[in-house]
Amino acid sequence: MAGEDIRTYFSKQQAARPAPSIMSSTSKKDAKRPASSPPEDSKEPPAARPKTTQNEPPPEASAPGDAQPTTLKLTYHEGDIFGAPDNTVLIHACNTQGSWGAGIAAAFRTKYPQAYKAYRNHCLAQHDPKTDPVRTGTCLLIPPCETNPKTAKHWIGCLFTSAKYGKAKDKPAVILRNTAPAMRDLMRQVSEAREQDEDQPVESFRMCKINSARFGVPWERTEEVLQGIAVEEGWPESIQVWSIE
Ligand SMILES: Nc1ncnc2c1ncn2[C@@H]1O[C@H](COP(=O)(O)OP(=O)(O)OC[C@H]2O[C@H](OP(=O)(O)O)[C@H](O)[C@@H]2O)[C@@H](O)[C@H]1O
Image: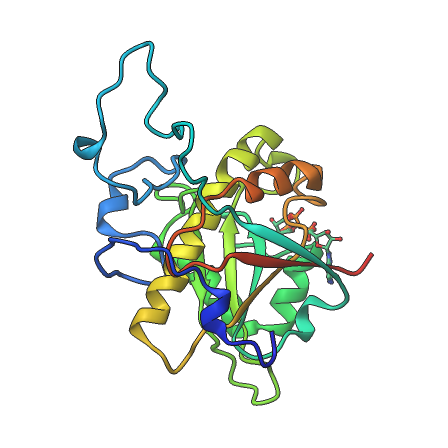
């Protein structure tokens, strides 16, 4: 991404969204929904949609000749995800219990102790795993917050794709169902953060092969879900997938 104009990296499609509360998706609007339901999408209100009959395609389906929406592209890279330049968002999958206990999450905990505190605070203080759990299908976006001056200025995107972890983790189908809304929530929050504070611009996105190890979902299934996400204005059109294998 170095040297690349970030305006070419983000989509220029028109959006019609009001601005934003940022960083956590637990907005007042969302507070009424149950813990396991994904957030509403920010598409046009239902009233604006054409009525359909049984013989007509659903409103989401495009008519013949319509331009297809741009969908998210993934590019593949080998190497250390943590070697990213400043202003990169590092994305990983998380449980809602406040644990970055193993796998790449444990590496995040070691490298970004302040971010780990922010994640714990979100799961255990802003929410409560027993009485008011973080909703799966959402994301916590943590801006660069480390106090060690040697630590790179990385944003961290925590995709809540499973409520629990270990043997109690959600089933693959549930994790996959949570993945697209969590990623869309991340995109929305990044887009809003860029509108609000130009001093901390997000310039690129790196993710590991989320869900694929401890969460037990074959990468190809997560890949298919991510590649189906329609890109909205201000969202990145591509995400880098980094692996060390
Ligand atoms: N140091 C490292 N550097 C670079 N890449 C590394 C790496 N270590 C692993 N990878 C790769 O990163 C991908 C994802 O593999 P992971 O198992 O981590 O994540 P996941 O998304 O399946 O599951 C999430 C839950 O795992 C955790 O542990 P706890 O349940 O808390 O104990 C969390 O807290 C969540 O809950 C795989 O391609 C690994 O090869």
